[in-house]
Image (cartoon, rainbow, N blue to C red):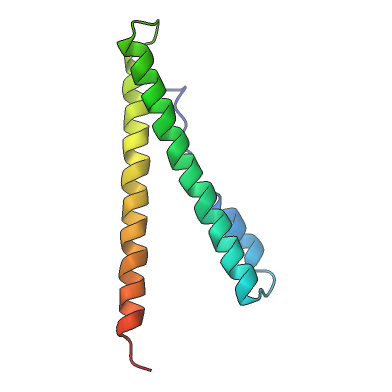
Length: 102
């Protein structure tokens, strides 16, 4: 298990720490959010591609450890599930804001 490292999907924590020290315009905030979102989606895609690559190599009979394939598959699955949960929470928050009366 020493070869396995879990890292955050994105660098949202670093961006948030930087952004708390200065005041942003709405445009800058939108751009920062878009950047964090894009980087996070790219990380999720990378884990999916790595899992697919290892699975294909195993199916083709190449010298790939079965446990490496299973670990990559689980990492891809977990990152996708986490991404979907974040999306669900964002949609829920948006719907709640739309229901608020002004």
